[in-house]
Structures are given as C-alpha cells and as structure tokens.
Length: 110
Length: 117
Image (cartoon, rainbow over all chains, first blue to last red):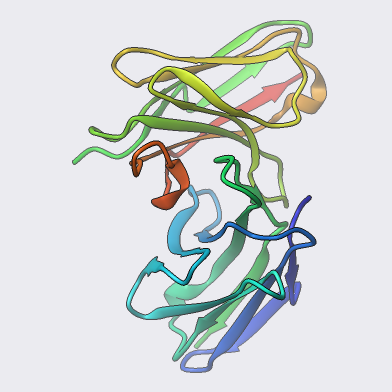
C-alpha cells in the first residue's frame, strides 16, 4: 500500500520553515526520506526506525509516530538548495521492501 | 569513492524486444535494489538482491527478472517490452546490518532512461 504524502506542493521563501507529512494505512517498520532534483537520482535524507532510532542529516529533522503510522519531515530555515521533490518510503514489516509515496514538490524562492 | 553506476544511460527499444540494464554498487555494499520510476511518481520497487539471493520482489510481471553476480553487480532484464515499460530505472545499493538491508540508507545510481516505441 502506497503511503500518502501531504501537502501536495509547498512554496517557500528562503529562511521559512516547512513540514512534510507521510502516512500509512499499515503498521510501519521504518520510514525513509529522500529528495530528488529534476533529472537527478534520489538522495538520502533520513531513516526512522521502529523503536526510535534515527539516522540522517544534521539540518533536517523528522518524527515517527508508530501508533499513528505517520512520519513528518521538518525543514527549518529553508535554503534554495532545498528545492526538489521529497519522497517518503515506508517499510511495513521486516521484508526489505520500500514503498514510496507520490512525492511532494517543494520550491524555495529568494 | 565511486558511487553507484548504471549503464547504459539512455536506451530506445521497440515493443517486443528485450533489454538488459546493468548496475555496479558502491564498493562494500552487498545489497542491490531495482526501482522503476515513471514521470511524476515515486520509485516503484521491482527487486532486491542480497548476497546473490533475491530478497524481495515487487508487483511486476514475470517479464522482469534480475540477478546479482559474485562481485555484487546486478542486471535487470525485461522481456517482451511494452510501451508502458518506458521509465527511468534506478538501481540502489546499501550496506546491511546482519541481513537487514533497510537499516541503512540506499544510494541511488543516476538511472537508465528506457524509451519503448
């Protein structure tokens, strides 16, 4: 089952904050966040594992609510380089299969 | 260190033909996953291989097959190509924790753009 990402699109000015959400209809084992710029490969941002362990970049934070089967990615003091499409990938069980959402387009303007 | 490499970069095939896509993982990575990405969508999981064994398969027809070699490189094969197979095919490699692949981040290659006419 594909996770649902919201909002569909985000437009920001440099320095503003944004929250991107990812929700699943199934219990989550892990949530992975990636950013993809046009014509490029997805780039790793964050992994959140069941039980609370997180791995990711210093300037990006995320939360993982196992009960609500949701994850949120927090982008603070946005920079122009944050522009791109953000995908969450969910693992529903220890089956090593990531299911990605449709992605959210985020645009940061000067 | 070199990242994940994929070949070819672009490919144009005719309906009914066969295609082989290749992927070399980052040195030390034993797991390779394949994804299909159509325009405007997220990557869709096709296969995952770890230590030359298939560990996962997505909802793709049997026309899609893959294998992993002793040097951990991988091939994705697609037979009897359809117009709907036109997409960007991404390969990703990762480390593993014991045999758990998704404990670590996946590094994606630049992809192979396949066009079926």
